[in-house]
Length: 119
Image 1: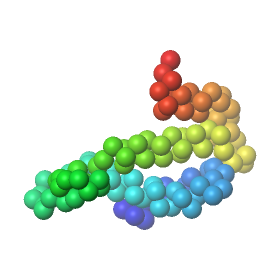
Image 2 (image 1 turned 45 degrees about the vertical axis):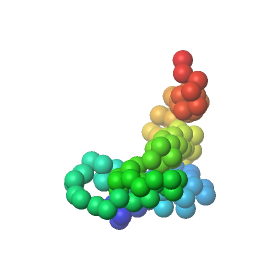
Image 3 (image 1 turned 135 degrees about the vertical axis):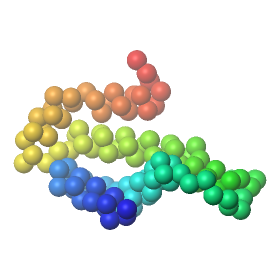
């Protein structure tokens, strides 16, 4: 699965001008895909309780890594990918450029949604 999720980043690098994001996404996207797989293909197994990231209690294995902070990180990453797709298509991909220009308002709208400015 790691190779497949790295392929996602490679595909994005071909279509979009990522700059320094490519290096960050090489780690982040496979991590997010791994979390997704853990949720979608859940296998209920007995595990020892683990310390919660706050260190204040012990929780189930799943609760130790499916946290509010991790969910916020995932949403922020998705927003970053979508915003980059709209704002940074490589010019040689004319259909992608046309698509992004037709919906130029979408990145600002997504950011407003993310920051609670819902209309």
